[in-house]
Image 1 (cartoon, helix red, strand yellow):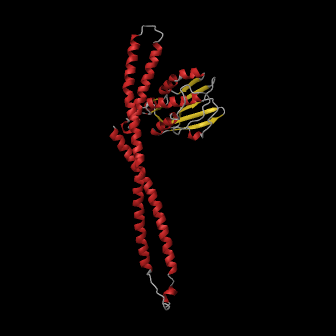
Image 2 (tube, rainbow, N blue to C red):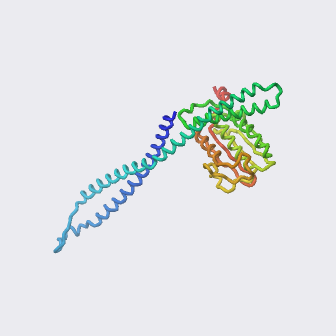
Image 3 (spheres, rainbow, N blue to C red):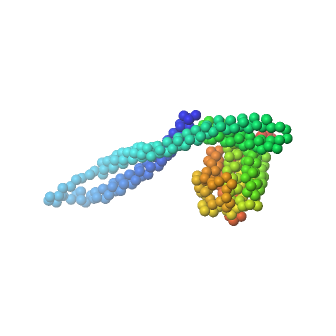
Length: 336
């Protein structure tokens, strides 16, 4: 697994190195050609026929240069200079991006190690909750709470598995199209407790026919991050509206809050890692680290989609994640 991830990183780094090196080589070659061209025309300007026919003055020495030979010499020097500049550019670029490859490897190793270490404790926790759930008598008031705890544990296990796949993209198998409404609905349900404590209403409007090939665990992570961000900017008594709809060839998840808009940061930067806008209300989950929305952008980009701020102002903010929509089985059968 790690070997495959390292090979993928190596290919990406080498591709980036070749791209940057090629650009530097072209720029260096253009400068060399320009310099040689200026020198060539300067020499030609100095080669005046009238001076060639004049006899040298006493004590004066003249060197005669054949025009054809001068052109050949300049061409040879130019080709060699361009080749040397290109080779040096590729060598320097490869050395410059080498730390980037190491950083990518360390990042993947950390994600894989952390996720792997979490799998066993979560599996044990799920097993203990299952034992507790089976031991509860019929009609016990805590039955629903234990069931919710088990569902949350399963969600965490899915997130860990999703992180492991993200650390090794080549192992990520093709996912069958599935409705977006399910994972988004589970995200809304899991954050319902936080919303009630904050006095914020969560309203879900999901088209059950909208489908995508984004893994349900990844989709739920994205929805959770978007809704959690909206709750952080929603005053008590307001509403957060979550919509799932189709727009052309895209499946779109939008989250709209009724806060005061994005302040303290350029809206285009809120998806950068560790970038944080000023929250309108204290976060129930503690201080944000500016990672959730960055993960949304990463997941969307990995599956050919995007996420953006479509509106922000004193009446609220709307974030939209777009991913390629999948054809529903019903539509496929009708077409057949």
